[in-house]
Image 1 (tube, rainbow, N blue to C red):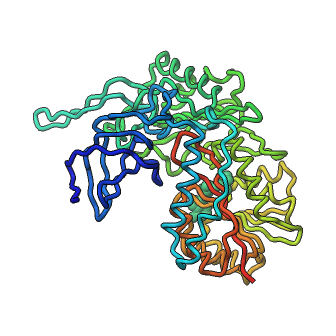
Image 2 (image 1 turned 90 degrees about the vertical axis):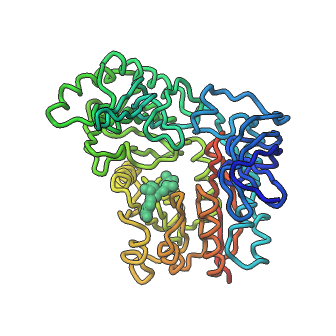
Image 3 (image 1 turned 120 degrees about the horizontal axis):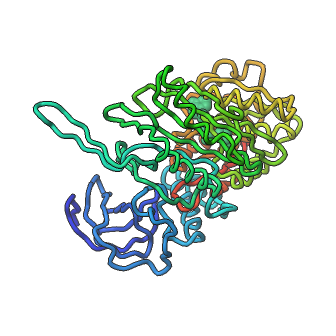
Length: 478
Ligand SMILES: C[S@@+](CC[C@H](N)C(=O)[O-])C[C@H]1O[C@@H](n2cnc3c(N)ncnc32)[C@H](O)[C@@H]1O
């Protein structure tokens, strides 16, 4: 049967696919439908067609899935942050496990006979210790709930209405969806957000308009150390030097709030919401908050990566340690180390650890934390893995890695970074991934270089979303 855009069909969703969309079939054609879950019968309209697969959107839900549950959040269908809140948690994680198996089977570029065995290496998923309120960080945008442009006498006039704080819905970078509840972030963060909303109304500070570039309030970052209770609030503003001092007075109303240990204002005069070279003003408290993982403490600054699910991260790190089997003879690489959390945890088992990270403030946080934790056998290199591993850290330099732990961003590893790690011929390679598709791509290269895949352990760090974290353990053959 030929499928083409605009066609309307009724289908039953069979399973969930990588990326979170529901999957159904029309004849030989695989259909991907966002916002659906297995068991639902839906009327859909085809939006895109390529080869033997198509994308579609839901027109109408004809029949609910048998095990469908009521989503907790009123914003579930519009916000885009959660995909599966209407699916019981046990089913969500069972699907994640299946998606890992299928992705490895279909996307790993290696010998057919090797590939057939990969799904058998995937272990039972470890659930998140908290199913709701597990996020220690919230990033929101100030903006307008409605914006439009009119041509008047040959001039463009921009109108904005409803200054608010919330999320950009997928594909809508201009307007902001006001969020009055979210069940993913920490409840103390939720209380702080209510204060920010009141502050917005009382202070009358103007909200930044991304079209006219007028206004002041741009973004808000809230962080909480789950084990320490320390909270950070960071406002990003567009204000020139002479405007800053009077603006600071407004923010000072947060200074005495219980639990708040870091009150920051970040200057961003650029066109983009992500400042290139941010200037951070610490109005009260300190520039970082402290969080503990196991017996270690970490100083977290606003821009450094820190796992968003603290209790889940401890499970993840335990899996890394168990898989890496580090001994006092080992020199361990902690690649893409962020603020060196993994490296500092494994340092006690190893002879020495070397961390590599490209984000400058994360490296500063790593150095500060390692000093505070009195870890003497760890060093950090600031730079891009693909450069550092072939340059300062090449195998003929001063370190030869016997164990490599790599935890790249969603894009996976740059080919030069992966080749550089493999040039060390580490005995064990632990690949921590937040994107199974790019992991499968890199896995093919690693297997072809003479490694066996021992285990792939999925760990759920992101309940109600389609994001999947895995820890893969590879052993060098012979
Ligand atoms: C998934 S995070 C892992 C952080 C850390 N391992 C942890 O568990 O907290 C990936 C890290 O890689 C860093 N990064 C991204 N691209 C990089 C590159 N090309 N070279 C080095 N680090 C990079 C990011 O800044 C981020 O801190």
